Each structure stands twice: as structure tokens, then as C-alpha cells.
Amino acid sequence: MSLDKDRLTLDELTITRGIVRTFMEDFLDSIDLDVAVVGAGPSGLTAARLLADEGMTVAVFERHLHIGGGIWGGGMLFPRIVVEEEAAALMSDVGIRLREWEDRTVIADAVEAATKMTAAAIDAGVRIFVGIEVEDVVVDDDNRVCGVVINWGAVPAAGLHVDPLGVRAKAVIDGTGHPCEIARVVLQKVPDASLDSDFDYVPGEGSMNVRAAEALLVPNTREVYPGLIVTGMAASATNKSYRMGAIFGGMLLSGQRAAELVAEIVAERG
Ligand code: 48H
Image 1 (spheres, rainbow, N blue to C red):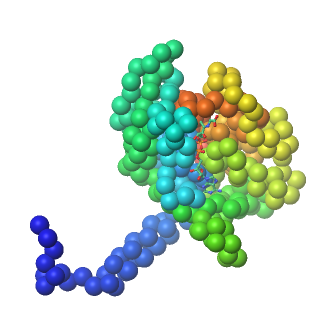
Image 2: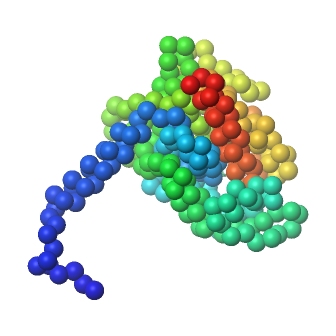
Image 3: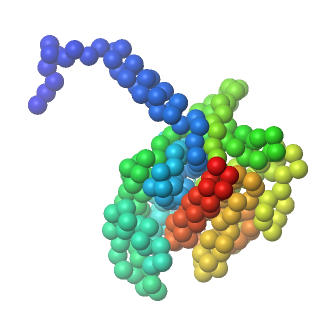
């Protein structure tokens, strides 16, 4: 079927109004949140989905136009990810097909994992904003984190000086992966801030030790500063824990742990 020019009633303004108005409605619905998740990697997407399942208002802010963080590249661009069987349900629950593998692991296709994790988060009610970077946090009078400061990801890429906007949230999840950007910004900018970790700075993760890295991910998933929870590689990076390569069970379980911690924080502090 082809579109008949004489029957088409749309004009350019229909498109412009539709895009701007619906985006603004969704954006304005997302400026006073229960939870702001920074980064749409596997840990952030898992945490966001589980929190939305609990009925919380959750938005994910992702700097890039694509979601999924490091999932797509699998291991060394081979698009497969390995997951321990303890975390397999966090994938099969969202319809990702798994192949049995050795040593009590399963294997998923990276494209299927990234897309189905994202789709499930959206279906649970998570708003995902792509092309938006978190450049700072909002703090209250006690210097507790109570929101994020956002700008278009294109702004720093173009070297423009554009002032950002603020979004309120009862809790913020740092799911920014290896750079652990939000915990870093808190340490740099919030007066007298220190992290609840073994370090008073963000050391980054250490060298590869798969079993130790995976085992430490859930214990390292913590509220490192009032209102700020680290998950995924950001949890490893705050503790100079190990790296693990293309095994993702720890990322998913860390996202699940972050969701549990946030649920406790929101219930306790309102
Ligand atoms: C908005 C931001 C900002 C910002 C970053 O790296 P990710 O996939 O994160 P995790 O921790 O969920 O998963 C880590 C995993 O992918 C990985 O790298 C592993 C397992 N490595 C092991 C190893 O040995 O190397 O995703 C983080 C996301 C990305 O999409 C970034 O673009 C985004 O966060 N992001 N978004 N504002 N300031 N900083």
C-alpha cells in the first residue's frame, strides 16, 4: 500500500507539534521522581525495571542515543554475554533466551539481551531519556543528594556553554559503569563529602579476577553517600574491586540489590 498525496491531511506543523508536545509532557512528568537512574547499562536497566515494577516513578538518563551500555559489545565484539545461573532469572523473566553453558552459566545473545532488557524496563513504566547526560547532582540543605543536574549530551560534545536543568529524585542510582561519574562528582563538588567505601576517592576497578569480581559486586552495591547508590561497574570502581570481562550476572544482581536498597531508602525517608 502506498500513501496517496491527495488524501494526506498532515502538514509540517503536525509533526513538529506532535514531537515537541508529547516529549514535553513526558519530560515534565519526570522532573520530580522517586528514582533517577544514571546510565542505561545492564545494572541501571535492571534496577530501573524492578523499581518501576514496585510502582515507583523512575527515569533513566542516558548520555548516548543508544541504550544497553556495554552489553552490545559482548566480549571483544563477539556479541554474546555469559551469566551465572543465579542471575539467569533476571534475563529469562524478560524473555531473553538462554543457552546452557559450562560451570553453571548460561549464554545470551547480546543484541537480544540489550533490546529485551530495555523493552521490559519501558513496559514496566520506566521513562528512558536518551541523549541526556547527568553532569552534577542536586543537594538539599544537609548536602544529601536529592536529584540530578542534566543537559543534552550534545552540549559538551559541541563544546557549548549551556546551563543545565535540575530534576528532583528521592534517590539517585549511579549506573555509569567504569567511570563512576556521579560518585566522582559528589566527591569533587559536595563540601566535605566522603564515600562509604574503603577509599576516600574513586579508585576505579582493578585487574581481572572473574570469580572475586562477581562475588564482590553485590556487597559493593551500596548507598555510598546519602541519597546516592552505586551499581554495576560503578560499585566495583568505588572499591577498586576486580574487573570480570564479558560476564554479566554480577551486573544484574547488583542492579537488583540497588533496587532493594532504594526501596528501603524511599520507604524510610519518604
Ligand atoms: C548519562 C551516562 C553518564 C552520565 C555514563 O558501562 P555500562 O554498561 O554500565 P554497567 O555497570 O551497568 O555494566 C558494565 C558492563 O557493561 C561492563 O562494562 C563490564 C561488565 N565490564 C567488565 C570489564 O572487565 O570491562 O553502562 C553505563 C551507561 C553507558 O550507556 C553510558 O553512556 C552511561 O552509562 N553514562 N549517562 N550521564 N554522566 N555516564
